[in-house]
Image (cartoon, rainbow, N blue to C red; front, side, top):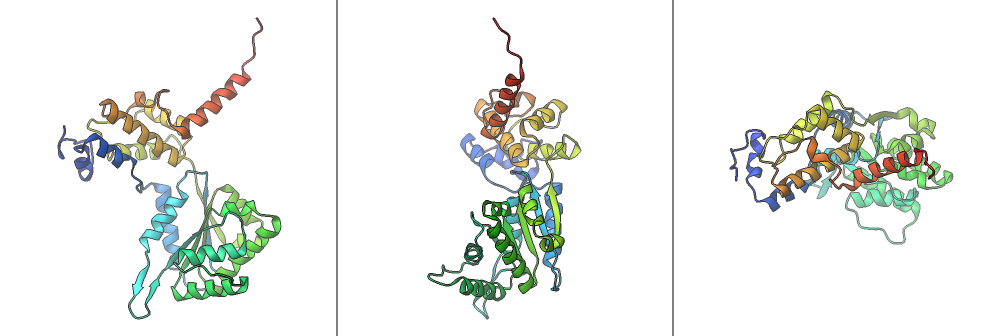
Length: 311
């Protein structure tokens, strides 16, 4: 078994993991972790810029949108971790510069305030009126020193009626105006469509589109970085043309699918003792729900299009 320094193909900080027993290596491979890439870095930089924006009557806002699995929520959580709450000894209050809440499953104004209150650690209010919950939410956002509100899964707003959507959009616009802080929304392309229905709100939003990966140098860089951290004991070939084309075809360039595919193939490489990844690692026998469902749908479509030959 290779020691901590016996895997020169790995980054020095990750070589020690290659010496772990198989079950511990697999647990490491499966663990959730931040994988940085260019688009995510640009999105984080834009969030940092907004956080330092001085208060004004019409605060700039940001929409981060893209296909499901492109990493919107991970970017939001990464930014939230970079700006954690800090307890103030003088006031006895957790100062919370970034308040992150998920849009409720039904876009009700009351549920929006409840989600925000919950994200700030406030106890649930029983029997309060809508106006009361709204006032408490505004007051607490000021008390914790909120400098930014981030609403994730904004596309869920479209689950409501047109009237509910209008009320919901008015509510978030009111919060941005009242508190004079930036509002950030994250979601799929449906989120962009939802915000465009409110002309006044849409004017304030800069749109940041997380685009699917193309089979280019940036994609090769992502695969290369993964090959340098996975605790496999032999050098992998993830950047060769055949491997890149196969991984891209299986995942359609969606970040979550790419990472899940590499994770599954790495597990298989540990179990089999092959200890490396290459084009053969992504054969048809590799079972991965996110991929196999897509591929099977394509196969069924091709079979449907094929002419039937009569006996």
